[in-house]
Image 1 (cartoon, rainbow, N blue to C red):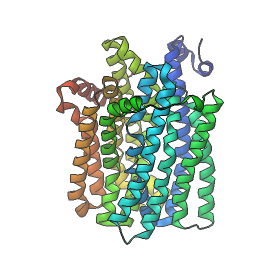
Image 2 (image 1 turned 90 degrees about the horizontal axis):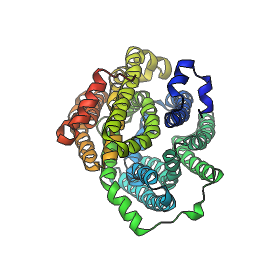
Image 3 (image 1 turned 45 degrees about the vertical axis):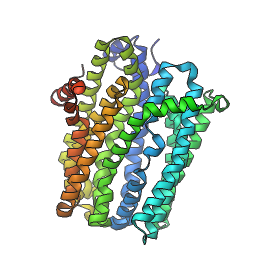
Image 4 (image 1 turned 180 degrees about the horizontal axis):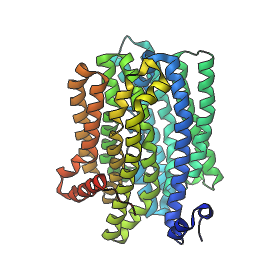
Length: 444
């Protein structure tokens, strides 16, 4: 039986999908994620433009710095458990309640650690800056509620993302209205930080409701020390990798703040948001195809690598479809949306958008490394990209400001997602597959 939505497709596409239930499910799941992110991209971009214009480069840069700084500690919450939980639930669905309960307990402990570490570090690094302390502390408080994202992971493992999408969209819609009201009432900077945490709390509450509504029972969840030990053992390399990834994705704004000030961070943050807004596309596809790639590995290597190549090709093609037009219209887009105060962000977007190609392929490659349980390789690759980004930022930011951070990011993303494949003999094949996707991303 075909999914209901297939009847709206042209005949040739219906024939391609006829009887392929797993593919239909994956496409439907991706469709829900795409819907959510497109809604966020459209409405969120409009509101972010309004916020950036209202706050100005200085205050917008300070808010972006606080978001980036608090984000450095998010890996203490995720702990690399998401892929491990999906993998274990797919392989052993009978023990799902123990897996989910244990992962929730571990993530909750990580949330408290992230909040404490972020606030303490901000006070140590900027002892006289009370405003930054408040901004970082307020935003980091959201870490305490991110442990409930384990419900989102459960829906991902079942390719039923629509329930999590509805929960997150309800939180997003409500907080979008609040942000608009804050602008109209000329609220202070800290109010915008508070809304970030409010959105996390509402989304977590929505996930609780969705899980109960779909028949889930929290009473069945239970945690065991043995399961926690096994999860952490498997996820430790991945957790360290996410720490490295989190650093090289956010350290540029942190270093830019220290070396060039909030005004430059505000301009650079606009470029980052316009280039990173598209990352939802490979992420949406990732969570829809990852379970099928895990299953393919259990069937045969031939099917496994065939699906991987198609995944690499697809995300590369979509990245080109975004990067080329953005390169051509980035300056016009920045000037039209954000105004003259942010005009220097146009050139930054022109170059930074090409980093999206490498971040997309890095996301796709993580399905391969997770399926092979090669998390140590992922960690080394991410750590190398992190070190490269820090070194390049250190030398380039003092001379070129935000453009120096742009160049550093592009090289770091390329190396972490593609160049590092050729550091290990075992990843030569997937490196060649990614190269093929970059050169000729054929998907049919």
